[in-house]
Length: 196
Image (cartoon, rainbow, N blue to C red; front, top):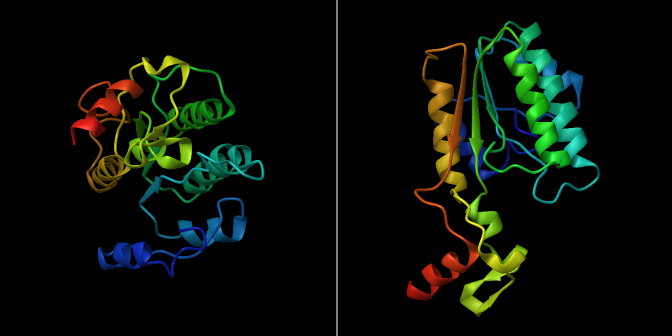
């Protein structure tokens, strides 16, 4: 089930891979009921971040995901793949708390689970929207820019999630911490862009 997205080109690409999709909303029980019939594996990658409008973290990342977990269990779904948030990024926030609450619920449940924990997405945090625009020679540096982060590409995280969803689980609960090949500070990232 994709939330209002079946007409988009990405949804058509997924259909070409043999995945059935439909419009739905994790907050709507009718969509959840329709989506879970005959489903063996559920993969959740949706989030309201980085913008979290209209109380999105609570509605989507917390309550919506918990509702989907409960619906999947009631439908006897065997496998659940959940894209969460890296445990190596330690800060208390509504987003991190919502992700951890859903992880806890999954670990207590009946399904085989794979929790994918990506670090910061480079397409979000090293992008013009958040003030990082080396092509225009403008960069907003936070807290001195020296803290190192293992930035990861969203497409790499999608590959991990797809692999987890299509590979039989070897254990009841698996956690995959996912990051880039090395940790970079914002100042390091500026150097990389200047050399490119």
